[in-house]
Length: 191
Image (cartoon, rainbow, N blue to C red; front, side, top):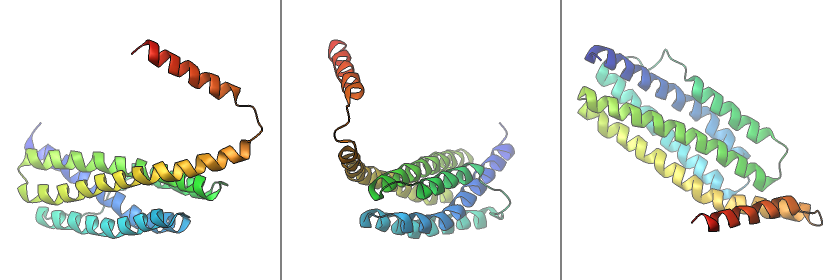
């Protein structure tokens, strides 16, 4: 691949990330407002502040490249934001809605981690040393946000599961119990 063509791929990747971040600047306040768990709400509010910094870093890179950040719409992020909006609008109890929002948010984080990882690799190949540290800062923040969501998911999903158990008390649970015991037996035999 010629350096010139990789440079254009790199710029397109950065434009895609810029569009994604701009969409998140609009989506994160809605996610924070919909979260019933205070720590989850605070996590979204903190990530909104970080997302503004991500936009600023990308703008710095575009300035160094003497390019404009606009002109490309990130369709992947658009779809992920729509999925998040669906999770918010579902008729779930509070902890189940929070669990659904976390799932949507983690898909967003994984998408961004992939995008920034790709951009970093392109910057390295193109010898864009000044860009690498800016991209890595954002990549590390995205990874930490994902880790925080995983931690919250454990407690919030546990609350949602307990809430669901109280709703299903008295109903037979033979199918899931036999499935779990079969799975445990299979795992023991195949260890």
